[in-house]
Length: 238
Image (cartoon, rainbow, N blue to C red; front, side, top):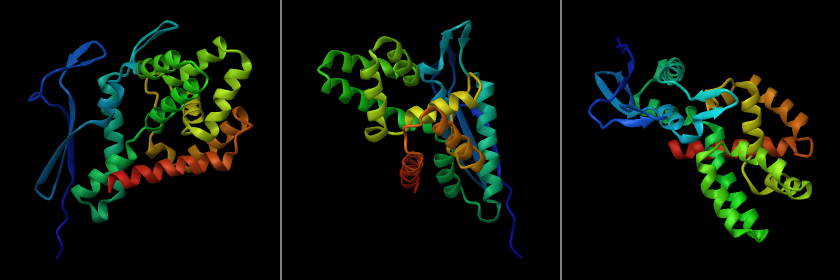
């Protein structure tokens, strides 16, 4: 007769480590503990790391602050419950770690760095090296989508259109992903995870968004680009 082992978990503050700043407040890092078959693993919360980034703290239009620890714990618990339920029949701690690393990822975050690199090259090619460096470095402290939106106000139309349209071919699909996420999520939890993306309803809504706001983009190509990023993430987790 085979044994059935129960999976248990908890999110907790790791008081064995030094406190860190979470949007101006000191707190212990948030960790996850998973126990199965009398074995336990511990690891830092991905969402704690993600939402600790400076760009998630906003002070505009009457809004001040960022995600709360409670918001992050809620998001962590939902993800962990999904992975456990999905793999009840063949659960293992190694499998859990792989799927956590994959499903937790924020597609806007993982495509952002490549888009920043694209803008750096774009403005270098335009003979604006100082501006290119300013955009590259400053974008790490602000939401890149908002930086591009401000460029629309500051640049002449041909330059801005070229920046955006060239990104269709030379950059990750960051702009449509973030724009779609911003329309479908509420502040301050602004993210689009792999778990959320793999819902067919989300993909259909994204397709509608791209066709409405980026009519010059090839929808099939955009979806293929997103799938390439997902394949890359899968390879990283194996």
